[in-house]
Amino acid sequence: MSIDRTSPSTPRCGWAVYYADRHIIVTSWYVQTPAARYRIPDLADVAVVLDTGRGPRWREIRAVHRGAEVVLFGTADRARFERVRRALIRALEINRSPFP
Image (cartoon, rainbow, N blue to C red; front, side, top):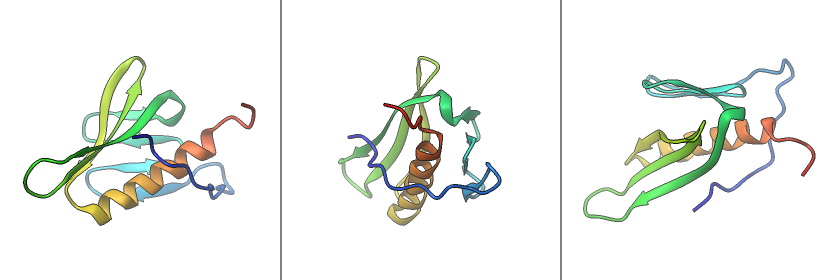
C-alpha cells in the first residue's frame, strides 16, 4: 500500500521541520532516525506496512534508500503514526519534481 499524497506547504526558507520527537525527525530535506539520516530525494517506493496479527496493530513506513529497503518508522500508536506519515508526505511533495 503506497502512501497517499496531499498538497504540500512550501517552506519560505527552503527548509522546514514537519515532525520531530526523540525517535524521528522529518524535515523538508531529510528523515533522521536512530539508525541513520536519509535525504528525502534518495528515498524511493515509500510505503505503509500494516501488521494484522494479534495485539495492537503495528504500523511501519518503509522505503528504498540507495537500493536497500529501510524501515523509517514503526509504532502501534495510530495517532503518532499518522502525524509522521503526514509529515513524510509533505516532505516528499516538496521534493517532487514539477515535471512528470
